[in-house]
Image (cartoon, rainbow, N blue to C red):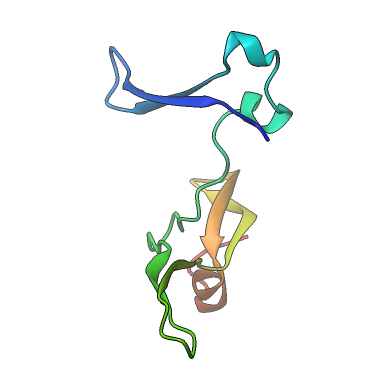
Length: 100
């Protein structure tokens, strides 16, 4: 079990949201993935497609929350003449909205 405290705060001079992961002192060191920062968001940088939310409804009608993630791929695309890594959904890749 990995315990950590995530703190969301606004940067002083920017309008960006800064995310810090703080580990309790009694825990020692946190898991390595927490120290690397925020994981990749499942949002397409071209069409802004995001996860869909809803309920999983089985035969017993006991609804539980679930999430439908878009198929996001990390690709190297040419932006303004320079290659850049982007998170793009497969719909945008198939439609040719990204030049590789």
